Length: 124
Image (cartoon, rainbow, N blue to C red; front, top):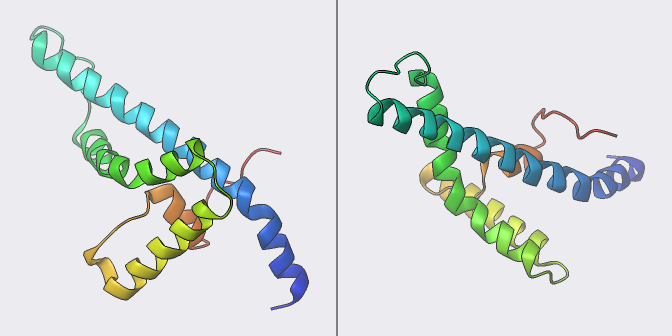
């Protein structure tokens, strides 16, 4: 790979990580809304029109599993120390590759960014 390509990746990395943080926040907010609608439907028996679909509940369940994976990244950002976020991400990626799918340490949005999957690019 040319040096120019590596340089572009290095320059874009902090912006992509910030975008992943924002997207995790959006997904968590959506999860809370789904569970609130679900709980409201269980408590108020007469309102069944706005119940979440099984697909929405499954997506919310997957996002709920992402919260413990997201907390170490959040703590590292709140207590900034140079290189800690990158070190944790490198450690998490290494452990996931070494152990396969038996362990999952990265939140879904971070996994997309770090695995170079096609994610929506952050706004300019």
